[in-house]
Image (cartoon, rainbow, N blue to C red; front, side, top):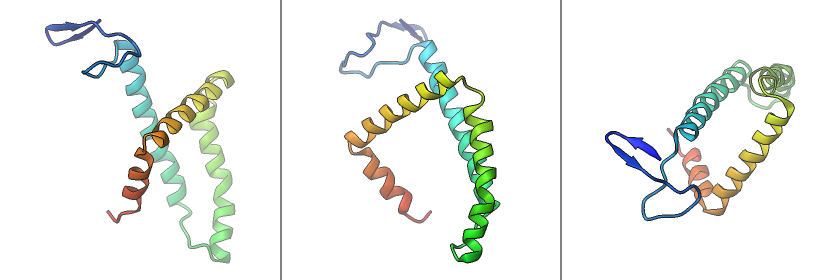
Amino acid sequence: MVQLGRETHVIQFGRETAEPRWLDADEQQAWRQYLHASRLLEAVMDRDLQAYRAQLTDKGRTAVLQMAPTHVRSVLTDLVEPLTREEFLALGRAMGAVGEGIRGNGASDEVLTAAKQPA
């Protein structure tokens, strides 16, 4: 059951209904944690890349090679190390399933097209 305002909704996990299934409290917390952490992670990775932006000339290649250890450290520190190995591998499997679902419904084409559009 999910409490929305004054209404209580009984929701069957995994069943399709005319109305979308609302997340329960635990799922809502997991969703919000995912959103928050993924935005933070993206910001950290963007910060690392911004520090080393360069065209891929010889100088640019050198900059990329110099930036790589910083990027790897950030991935380890901010994503891998806070989790157990099992949690990190489960995250990989879960996000693989999410990616497959997105590719399967064609949404990835829309996202990729939108990403290529100038801001």
